[in-house]
Length: 137
Image (cartoon, rainbow, N blue to C red; front, side, top):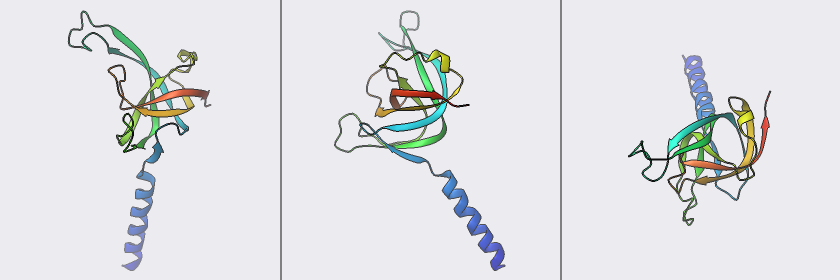
C-alpha cells in the first residue's frame, strides 16, 4: 500500500511540475518565446466593431505560444501593472518592418520585450515588441 501511495504522490508532483507556466517580466527585460505566427483581422476606429460597415479593419500578427505563460505586473508601472496568467496568444508589434508574412503558420522563436495592452489597437492582453525572429525546423 505504501508503494502505491508513493507512486501516486510522485505522479502528482510530476504533473504539477509540468503544468506550471513559465513566468516572465515586462520590458525592458528581454524574452525569447516559441510559437506559431498567424494573421488576424480586428475592427478598428472609429467604433471598434460597433458599426462594422464603417469601422476600419486592423491586420495584426498574432503568435500562438507553444505553452501558456504568466507575465508578472509591475505594481508601480502605469502601463504594465497587471499580471496576466494563462497567456496563450500575444500580438506582435513590428517596429523594425521585418517581413513577417513569410513566417506565418511556421514555428518560430522571437526575441523582444513584453508589455500590457493599453490602447484599442492592442488585441491581446500581452504584446511583444519584436526585435528578432528565427524559424525553427
